Image (cartoon, rainbow, N blue to C red; front, top):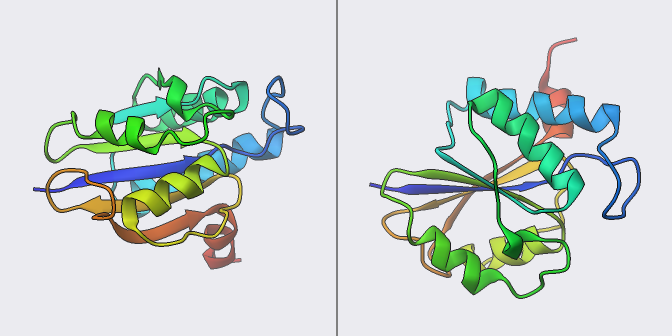
Length: 161
């Protein structure tokens, strides 16, 4: 029994304010990252939670299309929600065993949450990237095992020309 937690940083927006939509390149990058997670890594989220900020919601919509999931807004993942780690962890503790939860949010929230859950520092991930954490049983602070970071730049560098 294990639980996977995928911490996704939203795709590239046109500008960094709460009213901005994703850029066309950001949308394409997110499709590539989501397809890689599904097809190459064989990971299938069972839950999809998103920040209520537009660029995160649009990112979650793309993820939802790839995985056949409807994103659920989670206020604690919002851009201005600093210190949400315990609130999100409590919600993660309610998901059943063998779940895979993808959370779409922002930096620094993703970095802070990853550090809290895995008890290790994570550099600020680029847009359209996903940090994968695994928990042996229940989601507990500091007990997550960092599996890997999936980013568009890494995927695109490894594709054959």
